[in-house]
Length: 370
Image (cartoon, rainbow, N blue to C red):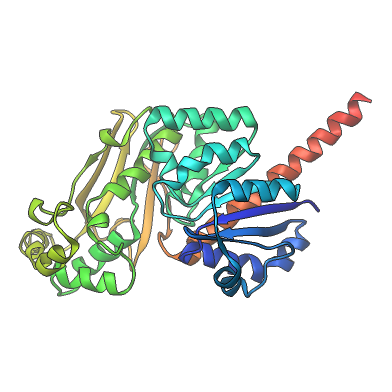
């Protein structure tokens, strides 16, 4: 049983939950022939090296024995220890950490990422990184980039690889915006009140304008488009920004919070315009025929898959030539540390199995050549 040696970057909600899941299910993985080890954990300031298995005291250990580091310190450590089957897990939300991916791959790492930045970089950078992966025979897995723990990317990849012609993908991509519009459409509350509630429950970013801008949904839509070989950039995604100009990102967060009730009149008018059987939903739509990507607020029938959504659930409709007007629907929790960490863990298991299969193939080829 060859171990998969994980260097975890980012120990916030997702990263810390991932560690707990690995420690809790270690026996289960062993029985399946998979040994997940975490010799290095790092946040933005400190790194902690664990010579043996990581323990439940890891958080205290990081605070007590962690040290300021550079990436080269970690690369030297794993090289000196001669760790095999290295994988860097990016559980950060950093725009800058992806700059390290090239160096990590060149140093022998596979990459598993919850961070979606790498897959939404300018197309030439995106393409060059994939060429680097191919050159070094390394894998890059990122199922949680879209839909948290839902199997959206792997479903699209499977259909595309099988030659299925995908014509359209629609989805409620954002768990936070799902919660906001599910609640606003059904309850007698102002939009500002619902936004406050979503913030208190931890559904939105610290600055909710990040969610309301639609840019995060735009990135997810772009990732799916690129999986289907569309050569697109984020600037080509048509995004409806739900924040008026006088409250947008050029003003302070404090100013926005003080004046967020200014959002109420427009959203109240939208709510009044709804028919008895309609609700508001925030959707991303990829039209493969027109090669258009749109993020917008729409009216949906309550009886539809999107109209039926509750809490912070996400839902995706995949239209294909074979399925016709009846889409494939994937629906479930679209946000949350537990489901996202479990999705990262699923990618790690998939990577471990891929490496085992490669080993078996190589051994068979060696025997045949004798």
